[in-house]
Amino acid sequence: MKPSTKLVIILAFAVVLTLGRIIWYHTQIPDVQPEAAGGQLDARQVDFSNSHSIALDGEWKQTGKADNPLYTQLPRYMQPEVAGTYEMTIQIGEQADHYALSIRSLYSNFSVYANDQLVYQTTDFENGPPTPVAITDLRANENDRLKIRLTFDEFHGNERARSLINVRFGSSQQIQKETYQAGLLQFFVAAIIFIHALYAFVLYLMKPKKIGTLFFSVAAILASLAVVTSDYNTLGYVMPLSHEWYVRTIYF
Image (cartoon, rainbow, N blue to C red; front, side, top):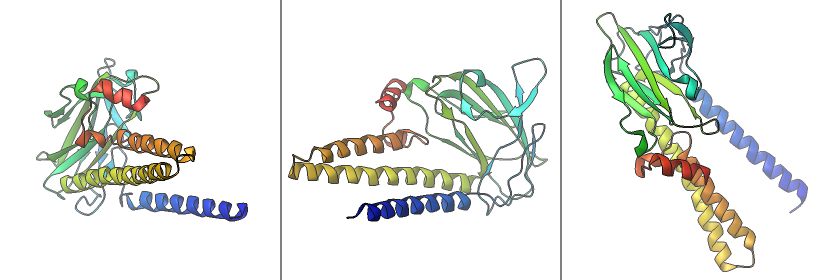
């Protein structure tokens, strides 16, 4: 095969992957994405019965750091200085009976309150970082408002082992659907990479002199392991690891 032909194939493959990613990204964007100001989010224009979940962007009310509350963006990454309490009040309309939160923050203990009631709390971090948490069956009060309070208690990572903080809000049905789809997609990608690893290993057994196929097989196995232990930590759904072994696996 000519080098120019190989280059065309590689570029075509890269273009297909990029277009697939762009299409996936745009299909996940909600029709309306409101932004909070002063700890208040007006989501009455969002049709939660049909739309994707929304990101809780904008200003959160941060308490516990000083006498006067601060209004700030929810930090993007979990790190030591992030520890504290963040509040947001969501104005909802009469659109769904039950609402839900999806929270992802692998390296921290955290608690979640809805209308001042504890609805989730990390039980024992030493048993392993949690997979993204879907908190369902949340209800607005009589004024169609839902006050969300997040408390990040302790950080277990370091400057290199930071995790993305991602908080989304929607109907219970939509949050459960999106969480399931994301986990399934991550497993699917890891499975495809693992199949290539097995295929390369079989080729190596057939022709042991071609050591490159063995190297590729090992690299693919490690890549598939990296996929299921990063981002959504989908490995935690089927094989919970202690925090110590989770960190060892990531570094390995």
